[in-house]
Image (tube, rainbow, N blue to C red; front, side, top):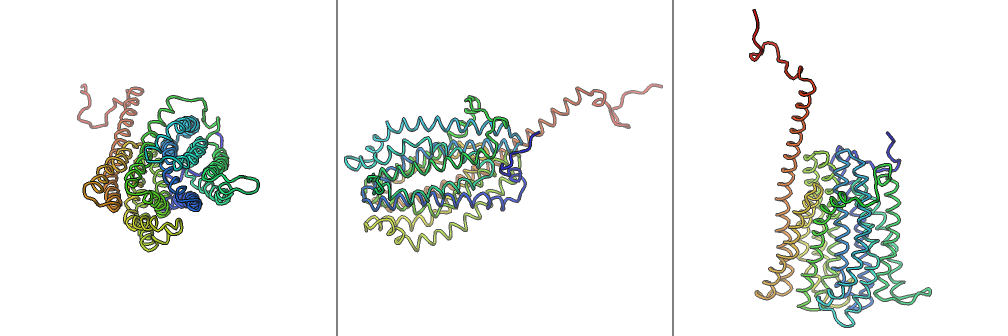
Length: 495
């Protein structure tokens, strides 16, 4: 048997080391990485605001479309993480290698297809959201560049999924730090020109994003290669395997669909806000980026819960799955109390940092003060749905997402704004109530599914033990038919 690759991540301890230490080891790098990912978006928002209010609104309007592609890539990567983690937890590294290679193949195909569909559909989506004339042209100037690099984004997410399954959250952190640093330099250069480059406006903002993604992809591909998981000798196969691709799709489609509901949910909110004012759309775009900074720990805790649930579920250590969820929720509660206090105290100054439009500042600050009381609901929701995905039960998370992001908002926002006349406050408090209801539903479903998975594992173990005894009886009937001395069922004796 060959030795494992020298640089392979240590994965065996994910099913044996203390859970609190593992949550910290996995969550902290992921949270730090996504902090820089959020700062990447914050930098984009800052420079768009310096260009014009129209550019800022265009970036806000483009975000749901951009997020749809992120949702697809991240959803399939999440499904791949769950399958690789389950295989590694069960001790089947060759199966994990095969799944990882097929996931990379699938990411390439999805990236190309998404670009083609995006170029056809995006103009119609923007018009549906009310963009016309110069405003529409500004939105398309940004999104057309982003669509051209969709395959890169898909590849980065899938490579991260392969690494996360092995317990490596540091590489994505490093890639995001590098991308953010590049973005700080490239955004103003590409937007306003210089050093022989003409000003590209908001299209330069998008081009900076694609260049940063190229560097991230190169770094992550190098780190994945060093793990050895995608080596042919380890079991990787690059020719499309319908059975494996089907298994990834079975996990990835619901996970991607769940994230897609987030993008669709932003469309719903944006549509209702657009009925109020142009400034409301811009304010929500800025405020949600600030809110994302508070929710960064949630992302790290999600990654930790997903990885630990997958590997320990594969190893049938369901006690550790429950402990991982409890540990993540405890840490999240502390962090969200601190984050909520900061939002309450600094809502207006934070909005002032991104725009000098007083109407946008006032609207965004009001939302942030309400969002301060929603943070822990997001932690509860995301940690429990991550556990469901790690246990290969992503469909439930999808149903929660559909209810939270589409069905309930359409009903609640419609009643709040058109029947009760509550205006923007009706939308903000509607988000509050819907999110907390979804969080409680996720708790009930996650507890039920962990218990069912545990019972199913016990039944499988009992059936396997029974089969082993039966095979033993067939191969050694004398031993099987022997009876203990003194048994009342002993055969008759002769005189």
